[in-house]
Amino acid sequence: MKVKDVKELEKIANNVRIGIIEAVHSANSGHPGGSLSIADILTVLYFNQMNIDETKPQDKCRDRLVLSKGHCAPALYSTLAERGFFDKKLLKTLRSINGNLQGHPDMNKVPGVDMTTGSLGQGLSVANGMAIASKLDGEGIRVYCICGDGEVQEGQIWEAAMSASHYKLDNLCVILDNNNLQIDGDVDKVMSIYPIDEKFKSFGFEVINVDGHNFLELIEAFQKAKKVKGKPTAIIANTIKGKGVSFMENKAEWHGKAPNDEEYEIAIRELTQN
Image 1 (cartoon, rainbow, N blue to C red):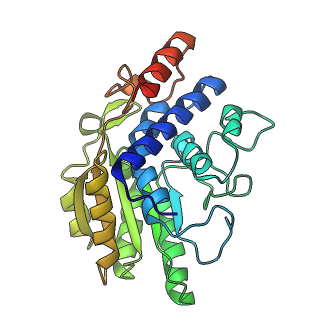
Image 2: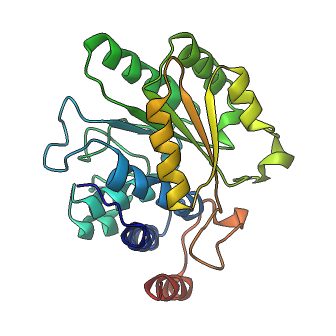
């Protein structure tokens, strides 16, 4: 199933955002800000780009996604539920001690989750391994890895970037969620990563800059990445933390807290009016 109509993709992304808010509010904990900022990216990947089948979540030839910024699991869970990997009702069991939708994604508990993540900085190394394995096995799969901009302050990211370039992993696509906010504030003030596009270029990546909320730009970028040969691609997606909920947008304090009942009602009302 590949959704090509932008209006339909926008509708799906809005549903993903509603699921994020539902999940985090039900858990009374979680990370809404960074989850909302990648909702459009995940929508394009799971509904327009990736070779996946929700009825065969363990298909050996499926494309893979590594959510390196694993604390934004609500976005991945909501996308998977929207795609049909599991019932949407389960989103309200987020972080439940007896549930499968833990605060960070667990590949052994949730269909559609390709890698257990949560320790920041490690996802790209895992994605490299998946991409190398695919080349060795001749499976032809593509591997996508979503990293946070605060996360790429981690040294392991750059060791992995060096490896990806060295092994010419043209089946690997890194997406940087560049909302410029991390738990402690502005990324450029906490520990600047800029110019981030030039850094990835210097490590041998093909680099594409996009508006992370523009569906046509995202689709074009992913299509371009598929044609790149001999090196990995990094898509720098400029996004808005908390995108879609007015009082959360561009606010670092919404990195890791849940909306109360009143805030929940406001958020759902805004999203259902879209």
